[in-house]
Length: 482
Image (cartoon, rainbow, N blue to C red; front, side):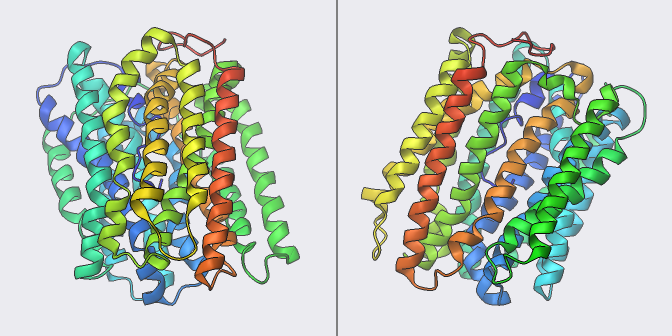
């Protein structure tokens, strides 16, 4: 993800794990928060640094996209496998392995002498995040019970909001004051603290079915997503209409279709159990996730780019400009979580995306010259953030109504992966906004079109909710069948 906003199923993984007593619950809570925060910090900080990194590395528009996609691709493709690995082999082991990989990759990114090596480091970061994110939150769910679990969820959500708020500001200051390489170095002390706590205090937990991992599914999903992403990214290049590019998109889509067929045959051993999609509600909430996070993923990359390139904002100011999103989402999610339990998920997931659509529509008012933040961008961001705040908690709760304890990592990872892949595809298409936009006025015109597309995606999310999601969610631990 690379986004400052946690995925829809991140908090939900806490709810779906089997409960156990642990002697060092507080240390476990801190370790899981630190581990999860790495993925959020990395996404938000890199978005703010993109213009500086492009200039320093001499990257093309496609190169800028790959600075984001090189991380999102393995994260989106392997988060399902990471969740299944935690279920089968132990969540603490998988969490520690993911942290170690992410830490080493962060150091490699900071020291990378070229764009190619930086992209390789970003890809390895994505592999580490795919292991640590689902395992960290499933550990948290297995550690706490009853009211303590509710407090843990609230603490985690608040920490996620703070991380999302401070990450772009601190990262922007580091880019302006020291250089872009330091945004990867800030991961090291956080990861080291999480590793120490995990080794010392976090017990290993395994609730999933015995058996090996779905390596066949991984072998299809990863190159499939890679080919589609590369093809969509290359559409913005001069050779975008080449037969090789079109063939890559077709081949990638074919591999994804084969992956879905294989998962249907694998049953409970699949890393994406197709039984989850048997009910209309789960299909509906998956579509809401796809459309909503595709829109949001595009915004989180394009808006800092607009502020820095056209508005000539310092990186610090561009990071601070994004604060309404994580702050309002963090403040509103707990209230909406309680409300959705009483009224059901359908109407919050219908109204929230409509608010997001209105916010994107307000971004069309961006002018060609001076980028007016308070009268133009701030109201739009507040409306988008309010819509997301209404949506995130009901989205999580609805998905978790279809999750059993034995598939905590796997099933929650499915929806998390949908959010990541949505951002991946949106970022791949952003080259169509950047290419041919050497002049600021052209870039702003392309930005307005992208805002309208984001508004349309949010409307599709709302329509999916009202058409497919049942008024009341299924009880936790069962498949949604409504």
